[in-house]
Length: 328
Image 1 (tube, rainbow, N blue to C red):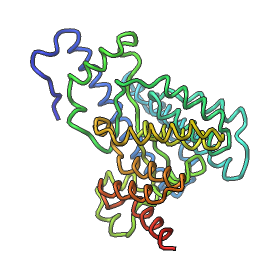
Image 2 (image 1 turned 90 degrees about the vertical axis):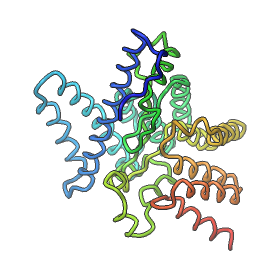
Image 3 (image 1 turned 135 degrees about the horizontal axis):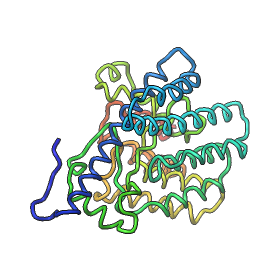
Image 4 (image 1 turned 120 degrees about the horizontal axis):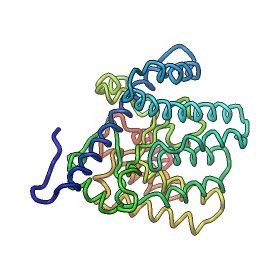
């Protein structure tokens, strides 16, 4: 797909920088796609996942032959290292071990893959291990880093605006103090089965989203790649985690505020263009209302999720579950 340029609106340095930013986005998207394929292959292997991860990290850089491939290799290593730490942390939590300062320090060393998705996974890990106050501080840090010109990047879906150079020019104009050295991109937050104990319970349904085996066989190759994982847009996940964490701390006013912001974000159609997993985000909002005791509102948002696509959608499970509750 060719870049879209609105005639007369981009000139000189602005055009050059916009193209550079577009190319950086394309590079990041391709990198994440290859990373996803490798993760899928690793998780399908009979060899232990942890052993395979170490093997990939060791060989990734050794097999790079020039400066460009070494740069890509370093990016892969950064993402694989973060994944390895998350998988190890999930294993510790499965054994009901506490994440100590050394575990947390290792996670903190891998937080710069993008604007916020790695930090959101860290916050999720802290929440699942009972470190609610620390999780809130991480989420506050995410909000400080976030700004209106951040562009979401998803390996699975792409919109026309993702190729519009005017969009990249607007992003640059809104971040003059940072230039393009600080990439204004956020990745979708992804959890594998091997990270289950670092994942909020409701997202485990996303790892089993198909209702029938026929749904699996009808899926495209890309759909099958993320069939066993949970993928969620970063911004809605931030609000969902805030709701959970303020609830865990007993800060009811802050919890209700987070829910209100989450609902407003999802109802504002202007935000839809920067979201790639609307169905999952609507299910998270529905779960918030379930936890509020408003089961009918929860059912409404689960049904709204199904309108985004009824096949291979975990909302099918939620609708069945909630209808069962209402019939009792």
